[in-house]
Length: 129
Image (cartoon, rainbow, N blue to C red; front, side, top):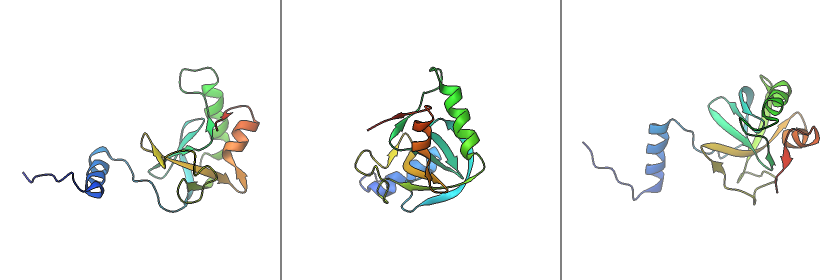
């Protein structure tokens, strides 16, 4: 068995990615069709799990969860969206870390509409400053 060297953060992060099957935070804009909706503020583009920055939608088991998730699903499921991760130029760059619970935090757009803004305006999420 080879000794593991955890003194190199990049190597350790790579090992965790391999073992846990999570993606590293993207360093460029993520664009593609939404393949799966997790809830009202989280979805997948390919293998990248995206968390919309700047909003808070109800979690599973909380009032409004199903309605919020269903609204997001109708808006973007299977559609091409563009997500700008924190650290790459998202409007909420200074608010959060680029990744949270293996989710890439990003500002996302369907055409020119900010998806988070639409969720808040429709009453399916709260603005989270």
